[in-house]
Image 1 (cartoon, rainbow, N blue to C red):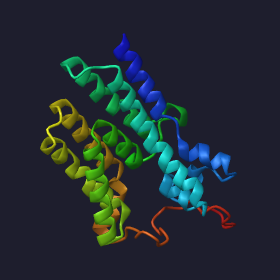
Image 2 (image 1 turned 90 degrees about the vertical axis):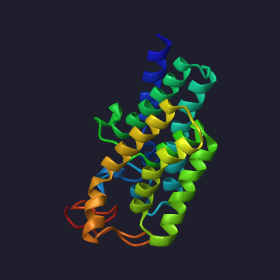
Image 3 (image 1 turned 45 degrees about the vertical axis):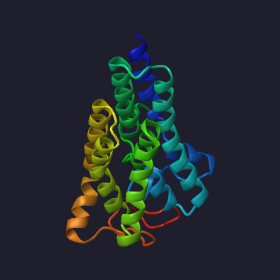
Image 4 (image 1 turned 180 degrees about the vertical axis):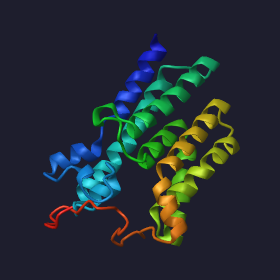
Length: 215
């Protein structure tokens, strides 16, 4: 029973969209109505409100970290405890990607994944973050940095000697994150993916906030 409670609670926590909450708090349009239509920090940044984007990023990461951290405090390192933490890891991430409060249309999960990884093992999270930062600095493409970090995270988990259940969970999380970036992958292959600091011209027909042109 306790296992079910933890998993459901983690999913519901993951379903809380800080992109939508921060947009409302700052009087911004719904992030699903402009840019990429993705309720995440990157799209909120397109509104021009950096503070709202930063708070979205921190909130999405914090919910991932909190769900896993709390689960770890109530469980041991026996097989049952390790399995519960792995299940919570996936539940909070799935909540962000498929949030019940937003009709199952959520964000891509990069920030939430980082929070989860930091809770599982701080070195795992920092290694993923360092990989993202290195790739972002070299290529100036956020999605490429996220995809590279996702691919290598399971390898880091194995090298750090984490329980195989956690390594498997990180691998599933990575595959889900890659799947959520399928449009970005197509743009990368076509050489059309936007670079960091430059306007995204591949966002579709949605107009930016304040744009008076019809969608």
